Image (cartoon, rainbow over all chains, first blue to last red; front, top):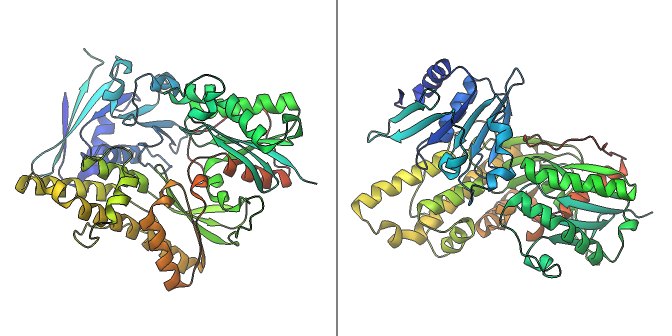
Length: 143
Length: 339
């Protein structure tokens, strides 16, 4: 497990840089944390490190946002909050995204828990009392 | 000579079909329980499977409502993107089949352009006033918050957009924080009417240019309530109307401040609203008041044309038809947001 601490927005870019340096291969990253914890904000910072050229905004309504990097690689950004049933993920063709060998950042993965790939990273965002965001990453690859 | 256009919309949750005679609407159907009544079915819960089951009945109804037959239709216009791939594929595949079967051209429509062009839908036997070019369109919905500079029917440019949450999302998520049911936007609007908009002050984002940000408001609202609830567990219940009014005022101020700035810089005095959030009464009143002050001419479409619908797709298709802007059958749908 690795842990990152974001004390304020001032060091979010540095943390995102460290994160991408640590996890420098595409994969499925599942972000757990309550509303307002900063999941989308951290994904935005990660996308910036990956040199995404599109505007990275909340996929809460669209469920999945697709971005291009400056090298025309794809980055997928999900928010499954709005899903009522896991089956709805079949409709949007989640396998095509998850097994596409692109970075996939998934918010509210608990909504599709049984469909998550065995090989993934579980990222938990916790707000500490002083508003510092603690980010714990557990690799499900090595288990 | 008049042309008949069939419009198909299936980018997200709703399946819809519309028939137009030139710019005039003949029919516009959005799939609901009623559409299925004649077929003995029910509306399925899952989005793209729902589209698959809705599309034939909805198109059939739209054509019948228009009083024509499929053979009368000159072209089929469909939403190519952005949207959910599974949902878009249903509309796209149907349009291709319809185009081949009837040997008519196919027209691809950008969903976001269609929201703006909803302002040009003409009603039968009704005079409707349309904006003149160039005008600014504030497109606000659950998934979008954009200021669009509209130079012609087919030439438009996004001058500002949200860098995180959409305005509709800010309403829905703050409603959730207060324990209101989803979607919370309409409920906040209702409660806000009885509350004091000056009761609480929430900080506004400082974002450059004409871009929007609503994520910070959501977070500050969340932590403000958390702190208040520590002192008084009944804080939300006791202040619900004032919270709604103050929150709504903040969101509307954020929207209108940037709109005002863009209109001033670009020297535009015609301003239009589009998207589902344009149903918000506070936003409508706020815009009207600002318009009086700024001497703007404002345009707000009928509610049925602000949410996802095929009428806006059909009218967009008409403008492309006039210029013979057709698309080949190998055109693939796209989910990425491109304006």
